[in-house]
Length: 69
Image (tube, rainbow, N blue to C red):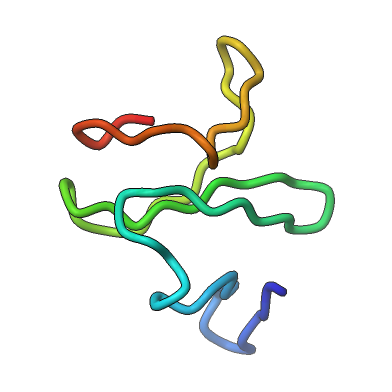
């Protein structure tokens, strides 16, 4: 469950060790559906809308290739 920490302006969805490398995780935040990714290339954690703008697909279940879902 997301956890807002007072004062730092961030919302914590998951611990880093809960994010598989180069795969998506589905997160609900209020009425928003998000896809969270921890990528190796480019390195980092990225959060996007879970719905594909082209086909309305579930992006958190999508395959990551060269940093693209």
